Image (tube, rainbow over all chains, first blue to last red; front, top):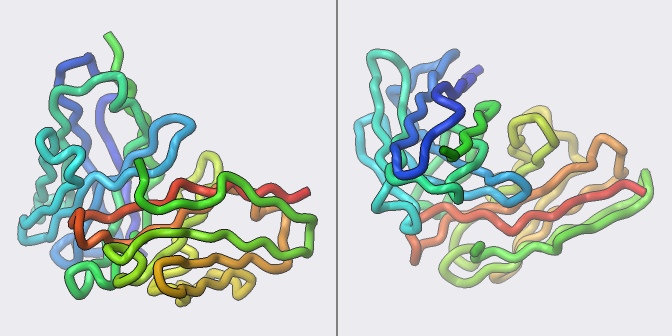
Length: 122
Length: 110
């Protein structure tokens, strides 16, 4: 059974770049799509984007100018970078497997990692 | 701002039924399948329903989903105290070319 675990700094300064890694175990990353999702404290879920194991990506338009998702198949990991962060980027960041068929006609997220809280503060 | 609208909260007594609605448009629910997620405090969200009405293995049949036009519904029957959580709908938005979530509904067991 696939399991995902996020890792990275829990505190990032404003204007700097948030960097997180997601380690995938129990299965190969060299198939399927993989996503990042975030949830600000007390607020709802926001999809950040996906990456296919081949490296193709798709980002949420609201974050597209600041987001980069990459994959390292040799380490069975994928990563998130979010630049020029502000306090509004404080959230629990989760990685997950993303099922995506028919250009989105059928899509869902499962399983999710536990998530990691990233706080943006000086 | 989410493009999918859910009621902020619903509640019912143990053993009863609750229904959560998710309203969208032709660019999302109207032409794509819907999924539902349970978000318990301190745990990773769990997939409850995918492709409008399919349950992953391990999800009890107390949870069921349906879709009509640009709206979708999640029903929870035989409500249990352990069902107290936030519930989110989700689907692909073809205009945004992005996956979108609903605003979320808090279920309270009275």
